[in-house]
Amino acid sequence: MNDIAIQVEALCKRYGEVRAVDGISFTVRRSSICALLGGNGAGKTTTLAMLLGLLLPTSGRIHIFGEDMLRHRYRVLPRMNFDSPYVDLPHRLSVAENLGIYARLYGLRRIQVRIGQLADELDLGAFMQRPYGTLSAGQKTRVALAKALLNEPELLLLDEPTASLDPDTADRIRGYLMDYQRRSGATLLLASHNMPEVERMGDDVIMMRDGRIVDRGPPPALIQRYGRSNLEEVFLDVA
Ligand code: ATP
Image (cartoon, rainbow, N blue to C red; front, side, top):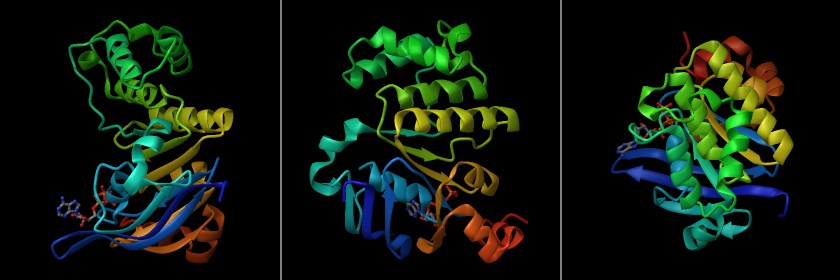
């Protein structure tokens, strides 16, 4: 049990007739990078939102680090964080002010030291004093990642972390995430429809379609089982 970060059993989320998540069960090993791979509407975001306690499941159970998330999520939430390129921050505040607000919200001590470390690691130094709203998309993504790493999360949930970034910036973000995972031993759960990204980052892949899990395994095993082009065409709607 100790080596399991996430345990999900028979998890469902319905909206009337729509079964956004339709009875999924899976575990994620501690200190691994696990990918939820699926095309549009597969149920990835809904699954992450339930893990974060932002959405109440229709039915099912979620345990994170052994805690029942439907009863005790406030015990576990401080050990987690979430990142997505669509995270938005107040535009008029500087990057430093924005990170300072979250650092206080997370109850961190030695706030300036932690922000300084992240500014170095993510190369934010040149624009720390600029209003967040004036940054480029790639710079904003790095700031959002700094926000997600402020509390040194043991579990980081990522929703399409590199969506709409140019290939170089996307690669840099993947590199940062993998570095963080290696250095900290954190667990990463990555929702993605990008097969090359999942192949590079994921130790293990959970394939979702129409709210269900259709298969699971390490990327090379899935590529061998389905063939790379079938995986992309059939599961990810990539023509
Ligand atoms: P994408 O990659 O497009 O973001 P996804 O795998 O993250 O897809 P979800 O956003 O989890 O998919 O959506 C799963 C299904 O649930 C979709 O059919 C979506 O239309 C439906 N859905 C999600 N939220 C709602 C809602 N609030 N009301 C009704 N249907 C919803």
